[in-house]
Amino acid sequence: MPILQSGHGDFYVQDPDAVRTQRAGKERGLTNKLMTEQQAVSRFVADGDYLGCDLTYFIRGPNALIHEIIRQRRTNLWFCAKYCYAESILLLGGGCVSRIDAGFVAVGERVLTEAMRDGQVTLTEWTNDSLTLRLLGGAMGVPFLPTRTLLGTDTLEYSGAKVIEDPFTGKPICLVPALNPDVALIHAHQADIHGNARVLGASTAPLEQAMASKKVIVQTEEIIEIEEIRRHPSKTTIPYYFVDAVVHVPFGAYPGTCPGVYVADTPCITEAIRALDSREDMQCYLETYVYGAESFADMLEQRVGVKRLLQLKARERYREGYYDTP
Amino acid sequence: MTHHEFTAVEMMTCTAARLFEDNKAYLIGFGMPQIAAVLAQQLYTPHIIWVYEYGTIAPQFPLPFEPLILGDSKSNYRAVSWKDMNHVFAQASQGFIDYGMLGALQIDPYGNINSSYVGGTYEQPDRRFAGAGGANGIASLCWRTIFVMMQEKRRFVPKLDFVTSPGYLDGSPEARETAGLPAQTGPYRVVTPLALFDFDAHTHRMRLIATTPTVKIEEVLAEMAFEPLLAATVEEMAPPTPDELTWLRERIDPDHIVIGKGKTIQI
Image (tube, rainbow over all chains, first blue to last red; front, side, top):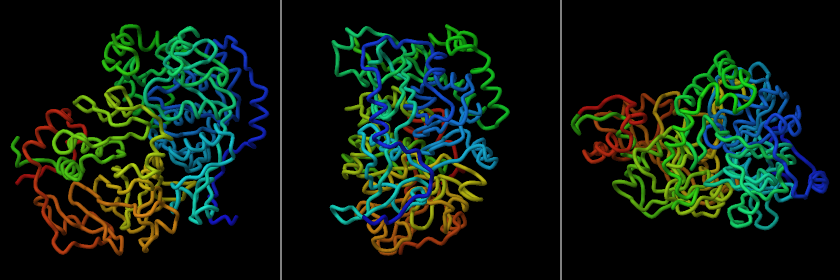
């Protein structure tokens, strides 16, 4: 089959048989996977890993885990920035990231520009939807999926996509390589200790992200019993055996919102957006919210306080659809 | 405050709102397009199907609208379904989404969009931007794409440093189909604080069709680094109505976060 066009961006690729072999060795039992964020990151996030998140720092982001990766000073990560507002830049500021798959890197563009110019980070160009489709390919165990996007653009040239002639219709079609990240970080509303997780509301791709990734860390607002999971199976977003670690972090998406539970802390988000505009200010932000605390809960206690957290919870007036309302 | 005084961005928002068609499905980008969609939904086209790229289908959210957060419970409220990104782009790929409405940093005469970088090279850019986000998929797959954007010479350029999202590509007939994009799709309108453009059916070049009240054609052209085609008659847009301004200022964007921008126009 002739290849009509090849993007020349570097892309992370796994042999589907290697992925299958890794899956074959994965725990199937209903074990207790509850652990602290320190334990989860030290066991399941290694230097050089390819890392993906579901959603983003301002909306149900896995912020406790992001902070912990920065605190443990992981290096040389390759970050999947699909629908990403701040976490890629925070990881960059923490010296954790050397490659970014740029779907959307919306905050800290000046810091990103400087880091690119200094050679601290290299980008491959993608889009939110093509990265999400790549995850679906990884989740399906196939090597690539077709899409009718990217075609005709420089985005395709600077991605790892290819264009071929569709063997069925004869039209040009874009193929994107499946993506199997080393690690997925997902913020759930509820999970049991085995990893059965409920992600409530609209989302980017929590299931595909979990299914595609070799190691999955779920941080959750609330731990629930497996009996509750079994009473409402249609609410389970991620079945437990995809998950390696469950971390219980109430307010773990702070300063972002966890829809249905608490609203975003808008002043803190404004502070973050401002701080991420320069390397120096970002270091202050990291000092205040990451390095200066031993854990996420510690940060919430020292820097935010119970009163503020309860306010954010009280201000979430739209619980309908997330939780059963009386 | 009378209805004879309004900002250029208020005019742009009203122009964009008046373009909506009822009972059509829209994939709507962040910022100005959202404000226009809310105005349209309240005043003109209550049954538009509003789809967000992260999976929300046809929400009915309460006002005032808060443009900072996309994806919070308020913007998802009373949707008919909560899905995910692959689902939404599958809808667009199937041909279910009639319109995409997007903001844009930089545009060329054929409606191609750059949101990746300007100046220097890809590896060593003078200024790096966010990248495509959902815009490439939206501009590829929706039947018609409408851009709502600020107008300055550096934003309307003859050639982009980087084509992030596809318009009519090089403008040649069938350029999109030849590249493999879905047939009969492409840019439809460009709305700015100064003017309204469409695209010529044959050359696919941007064409000036209307101006904001008091703004002369020369003033529009002065804020473009290429010459657009001119419609046989370049209309003057109807100014914002008292109803539109009341909704915008008092209910939709009471803090004037979005609509306060642009020069003030008095007529």
